[in-house]
Figure 1 (tube, rainbow, N blue to C red):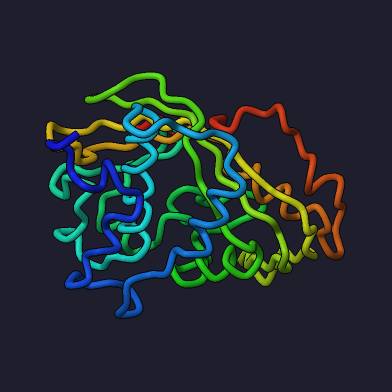
Figure 2 (cartoon, helix red, strand yellow; figure 1 turned 45 degrees about the vertical axis):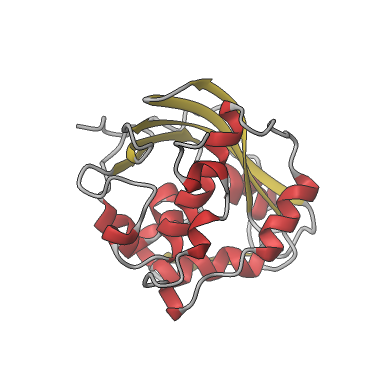
Length: 242
């Protein structure tokens, strides 16, 4: 592993980039998130395994995409080629993602969330206030570089109330459930010879997590908000990526 970049062997490698330009003018503190991950994860990957390497890469990618300000300082991607899509829809550039934020890019506009009504700061505050921590883990890796396909889980314990601006004067408000809420998905990543990400395609139900967080919805039909049509294909009525 001597020839591997540090972001493949250390999940917190990019936090050492103290000279880079970080959002809020400081390196983010991941202590609580890291502790929760170690205590609550369902899979432990052996050091040096493909699952361990992919987990480290994505964890560093998330830190950079969420908190670094300059594309040329994001080490986990090839900034000139990087693009990202969800459920076969439109591609987002690195500039798009740094502007709207990873949550907005991943969720988009749904019945329970409106990325179009939320900026980077709003989206991060929403989940930070509602969840004790928001952890992520690799469950399975199906293929290795240069095309890496893997299944993942994103979860947290809902300890705060949920407040979502749905536009047109409408809001989704729900009381804390004090339960673990999670969502699952599959991502296909293309990396270059330096293990820098060139392309990410993620497939999952973007309403899954919000449905669980809206379990105690105020002034609405809780059954409809939390159950919905869970068998509905999340890719329906979407345009294919070009």
